[in-house]
Length: 316
Ligand SMILES: C[S@@+](CC[C@H](N)C(=O)[O-])C[C@H]1O[C@@H](n2cnc3c(N)ncnc32)[C@H](O)[C@@H]1O
Image (tube, rainbow, N blue to C red; front, side):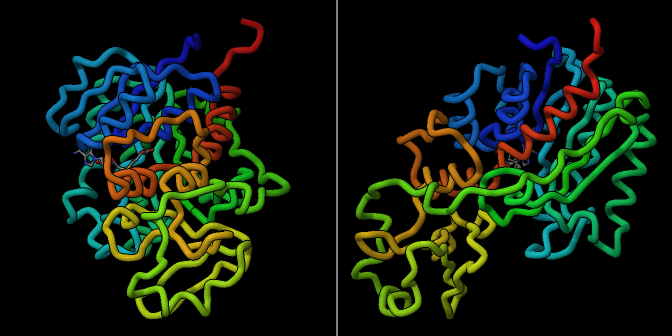
């Protein structure tokens, strides 16, 4: 077992912890407020899970860790949101992360958020974040990475990854991973069969889909009034609003007919192994939301491996 212990904030279903575990870290505790996400988390991880508002936890009572991670809620910063930034309650959760950093003094802090965090409010929001991390005594590196460029998973997801080191030497040794040469085909991620409930056959929307959704190699989206196909061979960015009903789940044509991606297929497009349990006592809407809220696990793993290299003392 790794000597590096990790605590995971805003854990969701544990995608960040999973990527770090795959790189050799040891997740010892996690915090998440949403009961259904906690349910999925605890089916897949042995870490001690605090299923409660992170504002109500006193971090001084938590076991010591080397790495603190947090894919903090992104709604406040995303282009799709209302551009409220720190004036939105969810944006303010960033300052609560600082409370944990102060109490736990981890060697590394890893944060993940939507790409737009860097440009939000003409860059002011991100400057505040970087300055606060520096004030807390950390050296900060960050990079926007697209899942299809940094893993074999063909998803169009672009996210900002922020890696902070307490020691300058670790910071200087760390570099972000290089792009991979090639991603897989989207068809490699599909299940052989899907339940009837995922098909549009006979639905009101079907007549508006049937003439445009023709190619089995393309993943499509319904954009309120029209169909858009991703011609670059990628799955569109999976988002939490997939769980809100409507037609937010990407759509494909398979050998039977036109259907939504299943939750398992969405999990695959986030790089989750099939051994990851999607609890069958949760509705598909909850699973879609959880997966859309999560991360591309192989991208996390690639970054985590480089963090491991930077902090492992050779020759020890
Ligand atoms: C962007 S998601 C992170 C998902 C995670 N990285 C994963 O792989 O599943 C943000 C998570 O923060 C949780 N959250 C929001 N406010 C919270 C709070 N006050 N305390 C604890 N968790 C909170 C949400 O329920 C959501 O699961």
